[in-house]
Length: 98
Image (cartoon, rainbow, N blue to C red; front, side, top):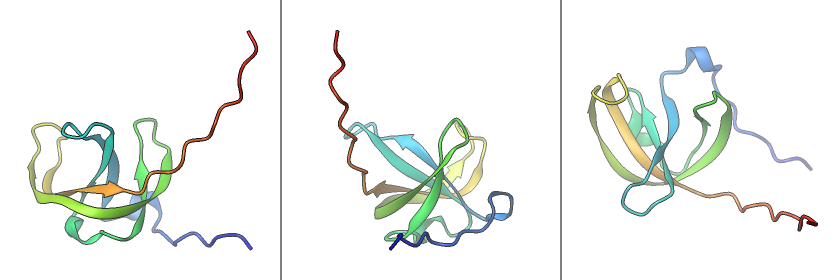
């Protein structure tokens, strides 16, 4: 049986936006959520946008930080939060003959 995807609001009507961000302390990526209740998504699966505009469903695991963004980097001023997320296993590539 196919896994049921969580229902989400259409992209243009959402109150929150989630994007990938660089983790400068540990390396890799974390997820940045901005919106009025940004700090309340730990343990939930949310749609996350990448720079190309594609969306991927990611499972947020732990809240790392929450606060107010001043808009200096992203242009958004308001509540935001940073989360760690459950990484998907990488697909193994077949060996390419030379």
